[in-house]
Length: 384
Image (cartoon, rainbow, N blue to C red):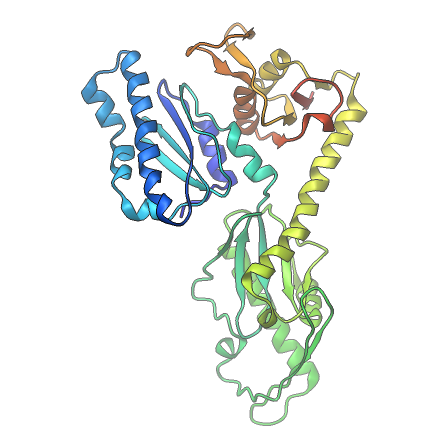
């Protein structure tokens, strides 16, 4: 299953070609109705074929361009392993698809750039984060979003302290005093080798192993700007926090023995913590917008916002996901034209602003229009 990441969204925003095809469709996850998934997709491909032919493309050129998508129609296993929506992007020398954890409306777009606006809320309302489960007998690392929780392979790293210290004999005289996740617990442990090992030796051995865990974490993750949430008994959490150097370790953690919590429950509790992080980011950005109104550093005019996005001026962009504004943007003349009745040559201007903001490393948030003052569906904070 191919789930969308922020890096994927950046790559889609960077792509530009005269035939950038974006296909969205709802999918059925389970049951006999999954057989309708390829039927719906085939109809979407037919719409693309008609658009390309209307634009003067020859039949053999169209077939060659759409070949990866056409092959997908016959992939029975693929269609049986869906979520609730599917996004497919086709361009010159590029083909990608993403299984979506939410349903989306059917749509086909053929423009110079991909239509990525429907995807933004998956990451802004669904932010990415890591969960590190500190069970000394079974260390696990997860990459998570609101809807997904995928284990990250730690490679050759020994995920059990007994495997890491094979020359030390572990006697199962471990006294566990743990409580349910979210409540405090503690664990007492003793190591035995050639003779009894003191409490300080135990602590030093565990600390060294946790240093190795932290190193394995840093080597395994692909993004180093995501929140990290720890799960484990409190004494291990405390030890890990002492040796931690990762700058985005969250202050809140999931307390309790990882053995006593199922994966789905771990995910649910972790999202409760992570969602508050992302909600605070949005609330802080809204507060900045409100404070800067009237200073020349904000705007709710799509004409000004599109130009500012193209010119790398936008720090934060807010938009209502249900809204659409159509027109064209002439980057050479730096002019934006708005139309009430769009035709195929017009672009969705909020999508244009989203693309350029992402390309230029700005922040993008989907938001309900009533959360910001005024009646306009798109607003921005400028860098300068």
